[in-house]
Every structure is written in structure tokens, then in C-alpha cells.
Length: 410
Image 1 (cartoon, one colour):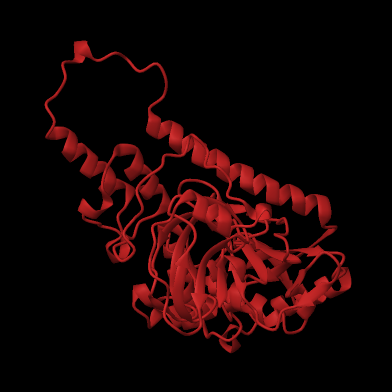
Image 2 (cartoon, one colour; image 1 turned 180 degrees about the horizontal axis):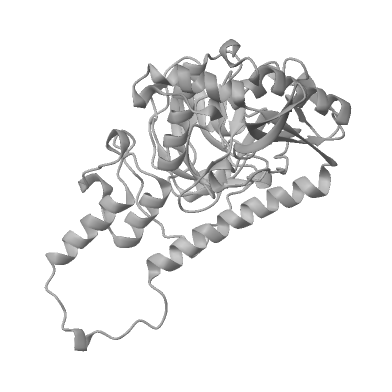
């Protein structure tokens, strides 16, 4: 018998809300198969089963907010599951230790009926909240997003269509609202919670981690020339972005300086045997997430490009899995698209390093005594001084630079 628990999806998470069950009592689940959806301050995350077996009991109802580590379900390795019983509040309380008692849901968060386990509509957390606010049933909405996902525009169109079917109330009979619309208040509350979550994590990082910072300027002529030539023979949809070269160079450089691919458990460094690069992705509603591209050093550039596009799409439509948020061993961030030339990131614990890249700019560059205009990029490293030092950090950045001079070998 094993316990399926509320996972930790980051150092800044202390609780989550069960958004949906993908499995029911008596169902068989395989390790890695989707088990439930968990809503955090950063969105709805699909959580995989950690063990294979039969689901014996579900201990938490959809809509319940519980701390990290709370038992959500019991999975039996063999034998028949017990009969399904409706979940009662006292059942959850008796099954959950006092130390991980359920956290009451805030009054501002609307309660809603559990979603059908086998009929979950693909949609972003933002669209899901808007549907609740406007009273729109997502199951009745035709999704126009990627893979049929329901978008905010789809929800708004459905709400507008519903209003057209309701007789209009004379304007004189409608009192002007005393405050902002409920939807605006809900969106503001969600953004406030995300900013509070990010603030807590970053404050903890700056308070507890002794950061050191390094930067170097890298000549990108070889990389951009190779990329332009390589992309000429490809359809537009299959072309590579220079960002995947940066990610691959970081992943490969970690073989030279493995202590940067590690976590700090409070007392000692733990080296990670695999390289899962977290990529900082901005969210349309504000804030950001940094899910992992698994085994980034083992993927070729085409596979890495595909994984990157898929990760961005699912991050912004609410389709991430728990492992993608809990597995990053180092993070790469870039503000180049915003015109920023350099960024010194704050380490996301328990990771021990974050790599930053700015935009590619043309600068005078000395080559064999001559001055030429070259495309260059500023690469930065924020490192945890408990784990590494400037010498090792400098070796890492110089390795990244060398790898980018031979892009065809990445």
C-alpha cells in the first residue's frame, strides 16, 4: 500500500487545491500516469502517480485546499479496492494527521462542483477562473486554442452569447456598480496571490543564499551564422531559435562544472545525476514559471526545439505536469526579447545556480588586431557560494562560450 500525497511543486509552495481527479476508486493507475490536477498560486498542474496499483481510497474532495505532504489517496499494489464511499468532512479529518490538517479555503475563492474525472476540458487557469466568474460551463464551449483548448476569448464569447438570449433590462433600472466588477476583483486577487508567492520565494532566496555574480560577453557570430544557414533549408515551423543553442550550451557545460547542477538540502550539496534545465517562461496574466526540459543535455537541437515549444504552449494553457515544476536542476532566464542586455537572476531554491542571457547586440569586437562589428550576447551566472565559487563559475561561463563557437557540435 502506498500513499499518494500532495506534492511540493516548488520551494514557495506550502499548500494546493485539488482541482480534479483523473482516476476513481477501483481504477488501476500506472506510475507516471496522470492522477489528479492541483491548483496552486501559479496555475493548475497535472500530478502523476508515483506508484502503480489499484486506487483504494480517495481522501480529499475536489475543491479542498490541503498542505504539501497531505495524503490525497491510497493506492494498493495488489488485491481488490474497497467499495467507493462518498467523502465526508470527518473522513478527511480522520485520515489526515493533525500536523497536515486541511487549510480552510479563503472566502474570496468560489466553491464549485467537482469536475468529471474523465471529462476535463483543456483550458488555462486564467480561462478556468473566468468561466467560474461569468457562470459559463466550459463543457458547452467550443475551444479554439491549441489542441482544442478553451481560451479566455472563447469564454467571453460564450458569456456574451448567453447574455443576448436574456431579455435586456432597461438602462434606467440598472444601478451603477459601487465597486469594480467581480471578475476584475477575482483577477486582481489571483495576480496578488502570485506576486505574494514569488515575493516569498525570492525573499527566502536572498535571505538564505549567499549569491555571487559573474558575467561575460560572448561573440555570437559563429552561432548566428550557422543558425541562419541551417534554417534556410527548413520550413518556417521547423526553424530553430537561437535560444535552444543557449539552453544546450548550458546543459553541456554542466558536465564540466557538475556542482552547479545540484540542490542544497539545508546542510549539504546533493549532485543531480541528470540535467533538467528549467526555462523561465512569462505568463500572459503576469508572473512566470520555470518548468524543466528533462535530460536537456541528451536531446539534439531538433528535439530540444520541439520540447521548448511544447513547454511554452503548455505553460500558458495550464497543461504542465508536476515533475516539470519539481525537477529543474538549474534555471535559464532571458529578457532579450524585452531589449534587456543583461540579467542577474535570483536563485530559485533548492537549486544553486541560475544563468541569464540578454539580447544579441552589435558591438565593436577586436579580432587579430582588427576592429569588426560582431553580434554579441551577455551571459551571467548567479551562484550559491555555499556550493561553488567564482573560479568554478568562471570555468562554467567560459565553457558555455567555447561551446557556442562550435554550434554544429551541439
